[in-house]
Length: 154
Image 1 (cartoon, rainbow, N blue to C red):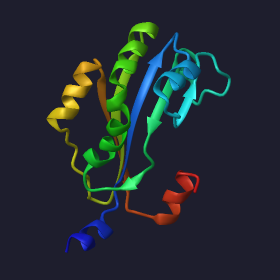
Image 2 (cartoon, helix red, strand yellow; image 1 turned 120 degrees about the horizontal axis):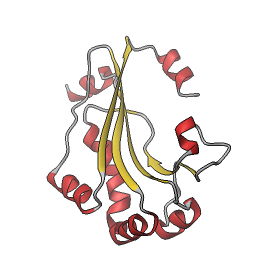
Image 3 (cartoon, rainbow, N blue to C red; image 1 turned 60 degrees about the vertical axis):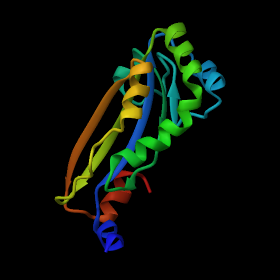
Image 4 (tube, one colour; image 1 turned 180 degrees about the horizontal axis):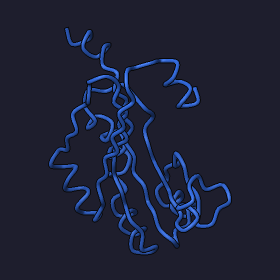
């Protein structure tokens, strides 16, 4: 029964952790954390993806989009990597006066929206880092596998 439910679930979820700031140094952050970012650029990088990115640098760790009935599962993948690095993260925040943002990007197909939840331990972790929490929801219409592949460059 559960397998049929998951097979019909068409909403896609991606979890993200971002470090954003005017003064950040993405190479030093990568070295301090010992984690390769999914995407990273310094302030004024010509290859920054968005116009606002020219004003601030960004170091981002994210999951890939997955069909998921519970967004918390995605976030746990990020938190599991970062939890042992809490002291390094506090040092980064202090050294570069930057913001930490945890969040989800959810693409809703049809009428199936995944649960958006946080465990108390996750909330405590965000609190210790003075991190923001962000949820982006996008209604994409009915599910179309070919259109999804095109949008995600697959």
